[in-house]
Image (cartoon, rainbow, N blue to C red; front, side):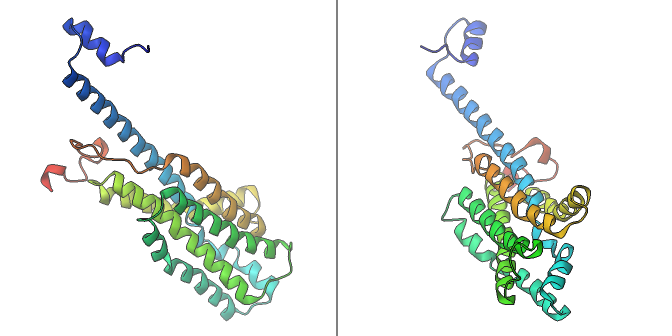
Length: 246
């Protein structure tokens, strides 16, 4: 038989008697609440990492010249490729609808697979692994790459907003801020490690978000709020109104 938990031993030592059933229930509820809160914060840290690599859609200018040269595109055709990339983001409604029907890990899986396919195909063209693809196919792959971002963003935002339901504003602003860092992270990393090689840059855009999403599938979970849960976190106490004020 396993030994009793430490809170029970402390009560027995301080009061000279075993805790009552009501006290045991209160202690169990407190422990469950603390465990849930730790899961929320771990998920928030994981979500920040996902956001740091989900801005790959904003890096088109870093490798667009290579596509233009290899495929012999005009500037107007190159602009249309950028439009195709943005059209992919316009289908973010699909991720929003799916977020109420499928688990979070599936949203991350769809986003990472779309990114692998979209940016992987562009890498094969830029690196010379395959002959230049038809123009319409490149448009489709750019659209897939753009849409991959919406699945990752939706997964982390929906989960964290549901977990920190009384601090929705600070959580949303915090996570969206990390997306702005994503382009700088990819660009600086590629310039340091690969001397701004477009092919290596596209490999990063395809592989790094997929790897981070695979890790996030383990730690990003939607928790269940306790009935007597107070404010979501002490660090948001001065930025968000309390639950009682709403």
